[in-house]
Length: 328
Image (tube, rainbow, N blue to C red; front, side, top):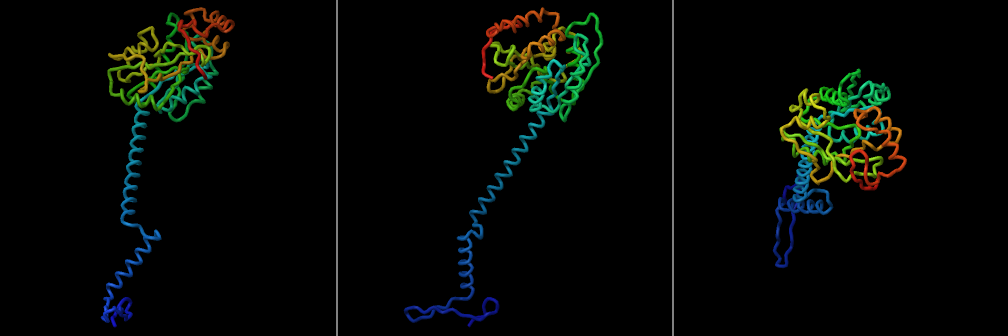
């Protein structure tokens, strides 16, 4: 008899064929019993095996790495959103497009300023524009309203340059400034940010971004790719960049020693769609009567002819570009 587990006396003897008794020590019996119990637990999945523990540990480590990587991606994206400011001049002539424009730009920046004037460029009050711009204000988008006054002898494009200057001054701190009009829609935000990440250390360079140009409808797309949108470092812009030239955005790009034109994303894609002439006949007539280029040509006659004869499937009267008909 042996004093065993829980104070119970017990013994175990096995009879062999040779007539000898083989006594098993109590401690060995206990080990065998525990081993049998553990084996049964492993078989039933009630206890993790060492291999499973190792797998769980590796899986947990992979998850932590993935979380850290996602946090790093978000940090980079947030940094890009804050390092880029955007100025968007606006008036009621662009009411049908401004929501789409801002929705596309919010994917690349949380520092957007919309600039609206109390009047259109011909001196007509723009109450409709003021009401609309007030409704557009939200986190990441703020509005700047500037008063209009008669400027005798000033160039036609004086006020659009003033709007960009006021918008630039109203931006939160940023390294780069993007000048977009309220009829220019960014095609792909993530692709823009990927491209932007590769150039944002080139502080001595300005960039003119590629855009498709459309006429009368979104199906008539110019074969000539333009580059009206300007990206430039904030520190390179001066008061003279906005006022000491008759050009509108070319002078902004010229504020840097190096200019790169017709920039496309990393996949070779065009960055923006420019819908300046895509709107109903009556709205276009209102636009050409009140914008900064109203005295350049007899726009109303040209528009009437275009809408009546509908002859512009292959060429337009603005730039003389040939057009492709593309699906909507």
